[in-house]
Amino acid sequence: MLGGFAESLSAFAPCVAEAGVAATFRGWPAFSPDGRFIVGPVTAVRGLAFAAGCNAHGVSGSAGLAMALVESLSGDPSPYVRSLSPDRFIPRTWSWEDARREAQAVYENYYPMPVAS
Figure 1 (cartoon, rainbow, N blue to C red):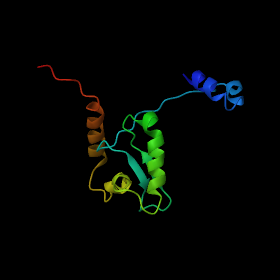
Figure 2 (cartoon, one colour; figure 1 turned 90 degrees about the vertical axis):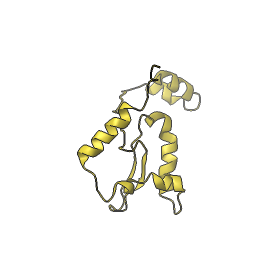
Figure 3 (cartoon, rainbow, N blue to C red; figure 1 turned 90 degrees about the horizontal axis):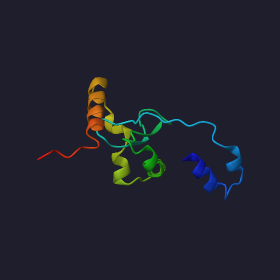
């Protein structure tokens, strides 16, 4: 797959085809307790911003997630982008175990199978 991308990109940057693929990896899917992206600055920690909680949309949603992060750092983000703020988990009225359990439930039910009639 990456070889195909490199071949296509080499039309614009010939050195890409020569560089080759050094390594590949994949990470664990990160599910948030409410099944929504976590995007934007954390008001309690100056300079800290998140683009996380991809909920199985890391690759397919990465460009949109990046755009939402940039928008969150602007002076007037949309109501949708504001709704993704990590601040929705502050103040901490939840336990780590509750958050883990809820995130696991989102994961386990993310691709529901039809129920037999």
